Length: 216
Picture 1 (cartoon, rainbow, N blue to C red):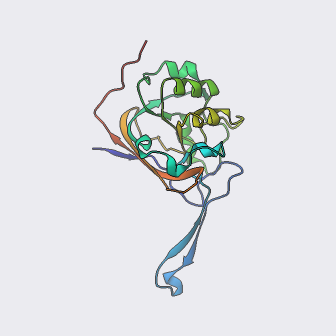
Picture 2: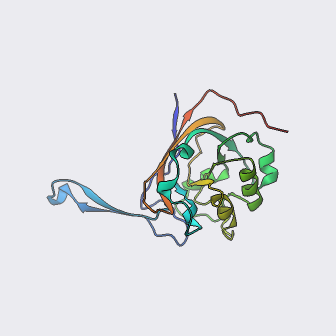
């Protein structure tokens, strides 16, 4: 069974969304300096690298990371490839066989952006009407291959639309080596009590299935 690690490595060189704190990783104890073990200090935001957004990210009263059911984060997942589109909306999504799926990962041209050392604001994203369509067809988890599901010029409404309906957002994926198809997603965010988001280790396991037939 092939396993794809779709998580972005965390390091001081990992791009972060503008305005978020940089990732800091530095020694605290060091064997080379005479300590009995190596221990490091890690400082990062709850939205660094591969991470999930919980409803509280956009709503003080929303569910927090530790309240998201693991059943949402683990299970059958469809990866679809959408190349050449900067803004993915209802029109683009209606062409795809995604009805009946619970979890959807969008593989876009973003995957090549991970080769750049700095943040790029020209990434492909999901529009508000695209978010509304995903909610309409019952998607419970939506993922994308860069640091935000929403356009850099967005006003937050795409996030709010999804999170208000308890649709979990999984951002910062690296899908560059993953063919479109059906997989089992295993996404385990840090269990941060009261967290608005959390870094996660996410993997896909190949399943010998086909996408469900598109409903007319």
